[in-house]
Image (cartoon, rainbow, N blue to C red):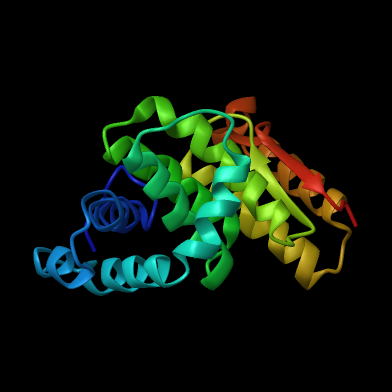
Length: 196
């Protein structure tokens, strides 16, 4: 698999957002929009995400709109709905979907919407019933954040530590590694919601 500078799933989310935007804004059929996709490795994922988002659009769109405090471009609105669909209906970890959506905003050519996507989708995740989530205060390094989150889940689920202690311990472990001792790698993670 080719390495990209984007979070896993970001290109598929961006492509699905473009497709949803074309259906909702332009009135094209989903079949016509999806027929124009290139035969790439993400084609099936793009199709599934697009059709799933459109299926649940009348449920997702009002929930996303309620969280928006400003007008946004139609492509960004479509991205928020696509990512909300993934948070609500996929087996992906919500934090990973939010991270991919932030990168997808860049892929859509709307880098100024990254903060909005991050905030709205984290609020959507909490409002949709997730009792807690780990948020980041700034864009994170892929390898160090992956290592921290792997440690967190191992400590929380595997060793049955409370979430706050699991996050604190994972941050301390990362801080102790000379390669990742700078606060850029371990400090941006915060636990929101239920700390238990």
